[in-house]
Image (cartoon, rainbow, N blue to C red; front, side, top):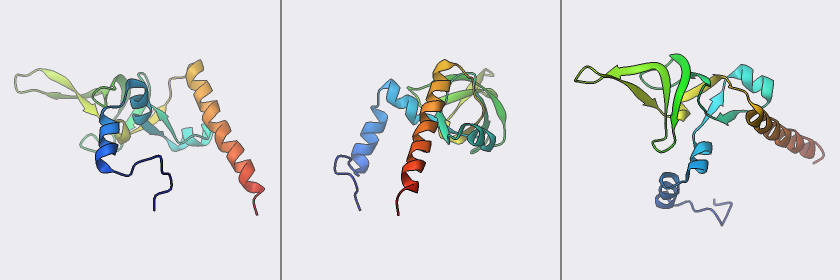
Length: 136
């Protein structure tokens, strides 16, 4: 059943919205789950990924490999992780693009914007928990 009349459930429209999304929208689309320790510490499940975060790959050919994010390509919806490379036919080594959804963040690069985002997300969770306790 459709809950919101303002949101389309059409596959065609969903795909168009996804692939024609602007850069700031793509930032939130390229979010990754936090590790269990970070989830417990910050009270937040996922965060948009950024350069210098430390991640572990959870899906695909490079599963269980760890490294630091060297680049985020919003245009291509991929992330480059250090030491995750492959050789081309001509012998050149290139970074392999990993989808952000296949990563788990193990260490956040903290700055004031990231800290405020964590506080904001955590505050929203706490206030909704308080509201729900009053409901019979």
